[in-house]
Image (cartoon, rainbow, N blue to C red; front, side):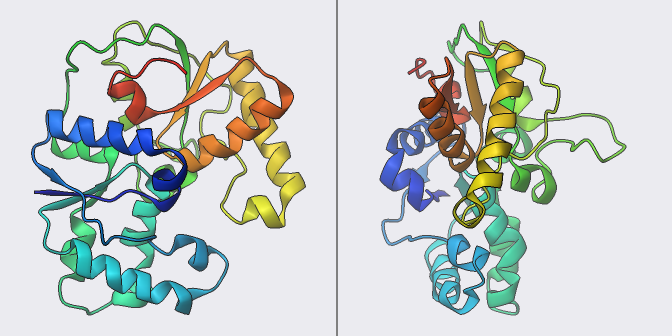
Length: 248
């Protein structure tokens, strides 16, 4: 049984990303359960230095999800919080090491566990720019970051290659940060916006119609800038594309 972990901002602002994730897992991975007692993973508090405020959320996460065979989440940053930073709260707790080992980001689970190599009747006839989130690259290793001397790979790129009609465009800086960074976008607004505009320009020069990513937080930041500037771009979480949603 898979425990579906949905980030709080997806639950509140982008529910279709959660539904698309559920559909994908049920279609390709097996039985899924959504524990309603789940809450925020605590990442916003930890990012701002309020570690003790995040502690009860980490303890709750362990209590809610420890019994599942796997935990899957459509967010690299939330998964990185569990697998890389819960040590601060839960080191030595019964079941914690097992929980870390079985908590996966969505593309990670589909590629590494399910080994998905075929999608059933999914098409997306658009030019797509792929944004790799920093947490996904540098902490979860969902793709190769440019500073590492190793063969290129990308879980998201592999999955998007299975979609009929989808054309991935080539970016000049394929693994640069979008500038969101959670509360960084609030405390360093000007820098955050300039970084976001740089990412958008890279996708525009490559001819992208849609920007996709595994983290809706990055896309939320970019979408705000796109809308303010009136740019002809759309953003879609990768789960929406893989589940067969149309460009919106």
